[in-house]
Image (cartoon, rainbow, N blue to C red):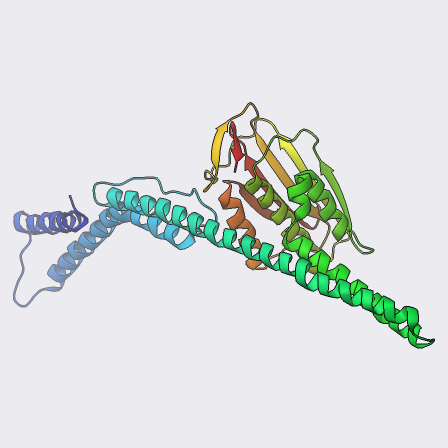
Length: 340
């Protein structure tokens, strides 16, 4: 029965019951209406309205839950579904809403995968141009400055060497930028070495990064390793820029027997095959800074959530024990090993 007919029949039952009560009861209506008769009619009307409101409240309660869910749903935190309840009509509406969420989450994950893939390709192109074109140009400038400095008299020679040092520092900075855009160490030496190198880059006079990386990590695909690296990179960048922290701990561990998070989804674009390893791989970054407080999520954090969706991982960001912020990325293995 449709929602329209359910509401119509509820109202019809209430009105019919009230009409029948007035017809068979010891009630009379005079002309003009007496005060007692008006009070009786008013009481009957109030009872009708109360009963009708109660029946509608019970019948439409699933719609209230659906409205609350619709106002709070977040496609970057997938997996939340509304329990199907109510009679035909409302139950069909809830099922349709859940189906719509499935489709939207799948489409969002697919579009995010394309966007991030294009972003990585663009990063690789820019890093290659910085290395091959700008880097080679500055290298040639350095060689020319050295030749000029060797033949120039003092104090011109000293000034040229200062310029040469400035250019060398600029070349080193360009190389650091290129490495961040395209983590060559990740491709060449693997995730563990890449994270160690990343921790070393962020360890400065004002910030110390301590790292703990398991030596028996299960095999992970290139896509999963890249997501882990980028999340660690973005977390450390946010810590260095905004947190005011002095100590950061970075850990990458294999946790056996950890079931997939309720909100996690299968990877969007990864073939899978069985493996003996199970549980999850956890990346945890914890600092002693001022914490996130009630600040809204920025583009960096939303980007991390989108990357986590690509590999079916669960990302949580919250206060660390004591003080500071903790970022936890849990990649469920689920008896599968990802390969690209």
